[in-house]
Image (cartoon, rainbow, N blue to C red; front, side, top):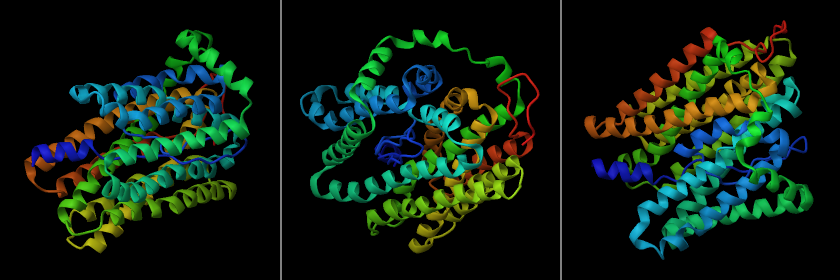
Length: 404
């Protein structure tokens, strides 16, 4: 059972992305993995150094081209280097992390600069819904492709969709000259990072910054545990169930839930509620209530109820898009990409540890209840930290700031 769980957990097709285009610069590339990657943790922190010179839209386009190509050619290369499968897969995951690590910090930086505060939650949650849509596509079409044509077809499908998206973005939204200039700047490496000074000490002396980082850590860890182990849970608990049902339904629910959370958040702020009050309400839903439904999963043997509880838990987690994700932009709009990179690095590391710890609990206890208890504990620790120390006041400059 130990080896089986390790293989299944490592083999899950992880979180994928669709795209939305808003305010002319908001990009969500399709079907890019969000699985925690060691190299991605490093690049998340460094990614902020690029967009002021290149532009987040072009950074995303370049990185999406690379990870789409790597995904598409993975089966082809494996068929010719059978003696080095593990080495190649490890190297390809490092490259994926390199190129995907810039995505969410770039998106956060773009949103903080291009979107007004009272529209941030809806914009971010709408763009974020593309992630659920991508997972829905891979969960549904990927399951069928896996049964009909084998695992290679999933890589071809995912990589091809990404490259098609890149082509249309390049063809209709970017001029060739802009992209060539961006590639030239990118080739110079991270030496340009010296040109932009980030107020490290000022940021990390503020409790609200640590609160949002810890909440992001908790959110990412809980999400990755569910993302990695839910398919195995359904396969083992309900062996006769159809894979496409539990791979599709939760993400189908998550799409409208994500958009609704953004609409609700911005509506409450426009009605006069304090920004931080709304952000904390979103986190009560995204971390608190979602963990309750995760707990329910460990105490039912009904397939129908399990689908409902899993859908509710995953759907409610999308409220995080309107909570901590935009709270980073509230705190430091001038360096939101950098701060999100730090938070996402912490979340990616926590995701790796959380998935491994979940597998260990399954192996030692033989009970799925322990995994869902772990999700609830992690989620509520992050929620408590954010409720106590979270704020929506700017901390990225030294002058007096406005109380939001």
